[in-house]
Structures are given as C-alpha cells and as structure tokens.
Length: 136
Image 1 (spheres, helix red, strand yellow):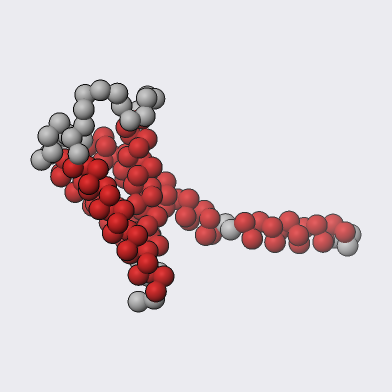
Image 2: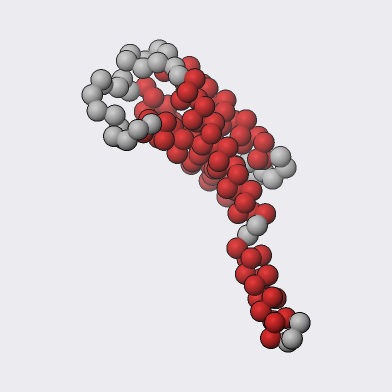
C-alpha cells in the first residue's frame, strides 16, 4: 500500500469517527443547525459527499467508484441505525437517502472531473485556435 493511500485512510477513519461522535450527541428540540428549508438534509448530503470522496481517495484504483459508493451507503445506514440508540434521535430513511444522494453526486463529479478534465478542454481550445490561424 502506498503512503498516500495510508494517509487518506487515516483521514477517513478520523472523519468516520467524527460522524459517529456527532451522531452520538442528543439533539435539542430548538433551532435547526441550518435555518433553511431542508437544511438537515443538506447537511447529510454534504457530510456524506465528503465521506464518499475520502473513501474514494483511500481505495486502490480497480472498481473504486462502485466500492466507494457501496461503503458510503453502508456507513450511512449504520449511522442511521446507531441513532436509534441515542436519546432524542431517530433513524430516518430520508436522511439515508440524502446521505446516498451526497455520495452519488460526489461520484458523478469525480467522473466528470476525471473523464473530462480541464486539461482536455484547454487542449481542444488550443488545437482549434491553431487550426483557425493556419486556415484550417
């Protein structure tokens, strides 16, 4: 295993521990964390989008996109299950959907950035500009 994968795995472990710790805290009946409509779902979405990215970075190359999405989905489900046992918390299928949606969007962004890199876009523009100057 290369050194950078080990570093990403440590960061992932710390992040997973942070998620577990925050999920262990009882929530008060007061103000929502984000005072916007569906703010709770947005937090779940962003939290597990980041989780997906860390899993993706910590896995070796073959099939890491599908493995990353599977592991993100499983950890999100375990997080919801864990909340059954925390006072003032409850498991929510909608929260899990928001978690998986965050991971899925992160996966789509990774595919877009890796398959259609900015370098390729610039290369196309440069070649197009050169052919226009040469009368092509």
